[in-house]
Amino acid sequence: MAEPNPQTGRTGDISRAPVGWGNIVKFYSQRRLLTIFLLGMASGYPWVMIGSSMTAWLNEMGFTRATIGFFGAVFAAYSVNFLWSPLVDRIKIPLLSDWLGHRRGWILFCQFGVAAACFVLAQIDFTESLRLAGMVALTIAIFSATQDIAIDAYRIDSVGEHEARVQSAAAAMATAGWWTGFAGLGAIPFFLTDTSTSTTFAFLLQGMAWPQVYQILAAMMLLLSAGVWLAQEPKTSRGAQQREAELHYQQAAAAEPKRMLALMALALGLLGLVIAAFSGVVSQVNLALNGAPGIVGWLLWLLLFASVLYPLAKILLHFNRETPVAQGYTQPLRIGLSHRTTAWLVVTLVEPLAEFFRRNGPRFALSILLFVLLFKVGEAFLGRMSIVFYQEVGFTNAEIGLYSKLVNWWVTIAFALIGSYVTMRIGILKGLFIGGSAMAASNLLFSALALVGPNKALLLAAVITDGFTSAWSTVAFVALISLLANRAFTATQYALMASIGTLGRTVLAAYSGVVVDWLNGNWALFFLLTTVMVIPSLLFLWAIRRDVQKLEDDNRARQAAWDRENGELP
Image (cartoon, rainbow, N blue to C red; front, top):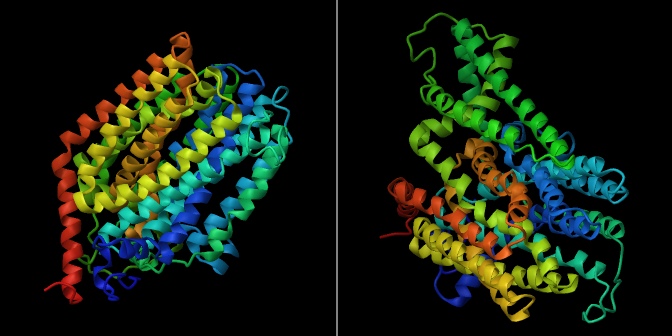
């Protein structure tokens, strides 16, 4: 439901960029945007458990850079979560979904799972049971990746389709919230484990062991569930649209038994892909923790996925959505249990992908998926090894917590909001070009830091620049893929794009430690390579710029049409 515009008190033009500091503050202070910020905190927080804190813990225990990098294979759960995202769209969590609503029920369920797994992780001796620790960390990643599906769907559903520019604001609040959970709260473990006396946090509990810290992290996850209680379940027509599609496929299955078998086979094939992908993630984590990178397995998985995706896109594009009546079928249809089962499976597993490729066409749909795969690879390589780099250069845990977490946190929040406002003005396409180019160039400051050594001023400059460019590019990126998601299948379609983007940030970045070792610890050259990694995505964005611009233009037209219908434009 649209909210009154902070400038006029009317509802229609809230999607326009506000003017004046007072109106801008009111615009970003909408309840739904503040709720998105809180849920964003819960989304980013689990990355502390299996990301930066885990990296520091493993490094202090004496594990090699390669092992630390391979431990990041647990993030592969974020890369394949789109495969089970249809279940988040269609299945309700017993009791919780009835009590809180569909989206909020899923979010709270996943938060409980993250907290429980984190507490278990605190009880494990890594030196004796590294594989068990890896499996528990993978459990955190799976619950967290599923939570992301529900939170992203909640965010998109909370913004009306006619409120195009509000999506940029929502993307900024989600980004700011994510970084608050990851960097703001993520600084706490570094202060708690620091043994130096120079920090201003000396009066707090310091020098704590990592297992104790992880018990605290588990408790904090439960506190972050406050966002669920403050949120309001968005009202959408998702259920009605899904029921309509289900009725169609029931009729199609009853009218054409052979087609019913084909539909069932396709649905079960996709279900098998979910199971195979999950099994592949577990096996690759096992290989990584045993000291084998398993890169051949990941490459085979990527090649298989790429080889299947295009023909599948062609099939889905031409998937016949005409009803039997529209095709001239006049015989009475008898709908049985097998027809209803087939229709449910098809609408759950097939129709979200079919609708995505039908609406965008296979060329543009696949182009978007390739772009999101490439866009964040360089940033991911930098992020995965940054904590190890800071420690090896000579910074203390307290300094890492202050600069890498707290400073980066505020910088990201500020520039996420600024970036979203500018993106409202100049458009998503220009925002992606500016943010992506700056993101690539900012990595060079880390190369300079590697050459100079533990210089706090240079670290501050690098952190501020990286936070600024990362926030701007992320806001534009999230706004783009949010616009591409159909409201009937929000969770599935957004997760498809987001998880492929995460694939570059997680699976490929798991080998960042190998790259550093291959370079004989030459951090300056490593960060130069992360700069080069961004360039292919910008070239690809230039190649599809007209399609992206058309998407923006169509969205603005819908926004203007809604405003005119509601008397907001002359």
